[in-house]
Image: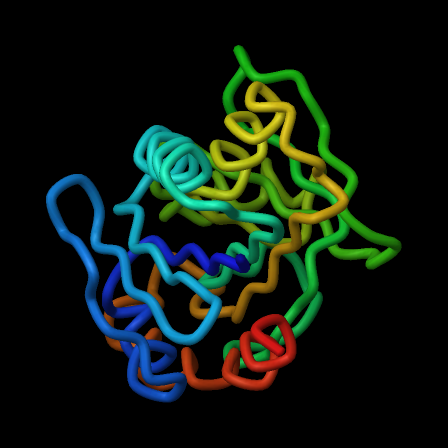
Length: 188
């Protein structure tokens, strides 16, 4: 079974609607099913994402996972609304040293345990990555502990913001549907 993981309903609602997902539970995490696929809404942050992936992998027969959602642009690669396959994932936090290589894609994502809002923070992380989110590293670290084959994991992100002046909550509804093709290809 394939599973797509989104951080928020704001990010997931288009996929729930477009692919006919129906809610099957909401006690621990919102989990939706359609055909032979699941969609889970983890909540924001690495810890929530890590716990969510532990939950769905242990409860369901998951063979492939896609982490999809919004990300911030750190440098000059792309613009708001562009979709990126992630090739490498690192962590912004000092206590996380692992690097995860997902594909040949040249796009690097850094996950942070807190929102990266200030331009000076963006500039600091731009030295190690192209994009920033708050979940992907937590998912990967959790999957590695579960001995889940990481070659069966992928991540695709849509750029939602690029500076401290951007309104991410306003931008996500405007750009999130750009992920529809990538999510559709994964669910096939």
